[in-house]
Image 1 (cartoon, helix red, strand yellow):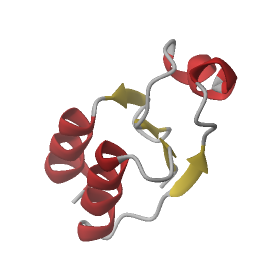
Image 2 (cartoon, one colour):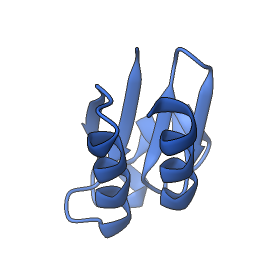
Image 3 (tube, helix red, strand yellow):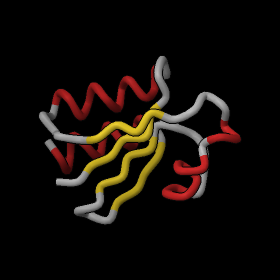
Length: 79
């Protein structure tokens, strides 16, 4: 499985996404992003926006933002 979570240290919404992945036992890679939106080029490249968290599930061809959407996806699809 190839799951990547783009996240910002100290971001409460990112922590919710991390917790959902951890609780579901999903193996994933975390890409820690810069606090400055203008420096989040990699996030923009994969998701066309600079906000985090962003989850990328390469196996299913899914890229999504918003912690609530990510938690729902993890619980319904990856758990």
